[in-house]
Amino acid sequence: MAKKKIQKTNAIRLVEQKKIDYIEHEYAWSEEDLGTGHVSEQVKIEPARIFKTLVAVGNKTGPIVAVIPGNHELDLKKIAKASGNKKVEMLHLRDLEATTGYIRGGCSPIGMKKLFPTFVDASAKNFEKIAISAGRRGLQMEIAPDAIIELTRGQFVELTL
Image (cartoon, rainbow, N blue to C red; front, side, top):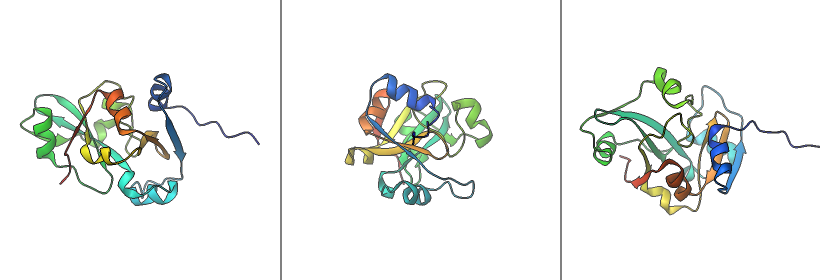
């Protein structure tokens, strides 16, 4: 039986273009449960290695991207300091797709419409690979944290509360 072809997302295209190793994980998602616990159960990866992508807006830089462990909260003061902003607030959900090209629950730090300043929580360095959204709901990719930094021109920073 032929394996079902997974529709390529911008994130996957970019990773493959750069010949970076990754592992795809497709899973059943639901609007009611976009949390890390659900993803962890579905793809059999411990919650500490599942990272979520959040988009905030800085008063000086505009959109900034934070990649943090899914079971933690973003510290807006830490990302403001790291990104050179005085004030940072979360991007309105209604603006997410227009800004990034991705929707809630399927937002990858890789392959956004533009290359925004990207910050990956330093805890990612504790793992050989972390899981991030591959660019759509129900699709995760396991990838080396350094590869995310390379693809987004990002940096590792302490970001969580």
